[in-house]
Every structure is written in C-alpha cells, then in structure tokens.
Length: 114
Length: 115
Image (tube, rainbow over all chains, first blue to last red; front, top):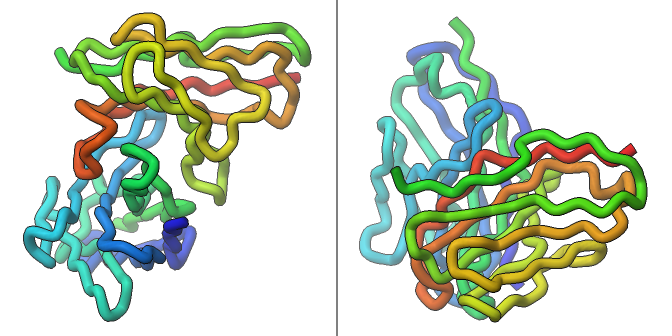
C-alpha cells in the first residue's frame, strides 16, 4: 500500500520568506501525487498535481512542487509567503489499484508571521 | 456553480441516536467518497462509490453505512454513533474512479460531535 509522510506538523515563516513544505511518499508503482490546501473552516482545494508529464509542477497561488523519484519526494514551495497562505496543507498519493482513492499525509499547518 | 454540498455543517448528538449526513454534487460525477479528518491523521477514506449502486469500503468503514441510489447523492449513515466517531467529515466527488489523476472536489465539511 502507498503511504505519505509530511515532515513537520507545523511550519512557521515570516511574510516574504520562502515556504517549503516537505512530502515523502512510498509507492511500488509510479505515483500520482497531489497537494491540497485547507483554509480555516473550509473544504480542501487542489493546489497542484503530478501526473508524470513534468517533474516541476506549477499550481495556483504561486506554489510549485518538484517530483524527485530518487528521493521519493514531492516538496511544495513558494518563493515568497503571504499572510493569506496561512492554512493546512495536505500531500496525497493516488492508489490507482483502488480506483480514485487518495491516501493523505497527516498535514502541515503553515503559519505566516508579519 | 459546480459544487459539493453537505448537510448539516455542524451536528451535536448523543450516543446511539441514528443520524444521516447528506452529500450532493451537481457535476454529474461518477465517483464519490467519504473521508474523516482527525488531528495528526490527515484524511482517511470511509467508503467510496464508483457509480450508482456500486459502493465499497475504504480504510475505516466500521460503524458507517452508505448508499448510492442516485448519481448526485451519497449519504453517510451512522446507525449507532459512538464518541469515537466525533470527527470532521468530508464528502468528495470526481469525474471518474478509473482515472487516477482526476481531481477530487471536496465539500465544506461536517463537524460531528457524539456525546
């Protein structure tokens, strides 16, 4: 079975600083990877997805993620944090053997300091 | 507007009192799923449905039931709720269950407290 590990349950950055949220996956087959964001009291929204077309994936709101097979990683980055980026971020892998099932990491809460 | 709706958004109930959380999508999606979110555990799948009248267990199905009589609706039923089912529940839908890169669209969530 596939699994996802997100390093750091809480990450705090200053406004304007680099955002780096870490995600490592475990998969015996080529993975399909996703980052979702959850703003307070809202549902999850797709930020970006990796489907093997390109290793560097650009998403919404200036976020991007790079797939590194050798490191089994899919870290999320943003060059300059905004206050509005404060949210919880989830990395997920799609288990294609079980239809469209998503296996989520535990989540990382991003705090942006002014 | 394309969306997934859930009702109720908040519910406080007592142990053993049957309840239903409704989920509806207006995007004609084949695939629907229920997840529960608990702190430190992320989201875990409860049940999913590949299409009408086709449902299957996810990772944590105990204590839950679902049905898929119509394409747009996928209610989650707790026949006899217990305190360990206190959680935040999300319904999601996708175009298809057979394409792994289909984006899943999530509802706003239902916060359930079982006393």
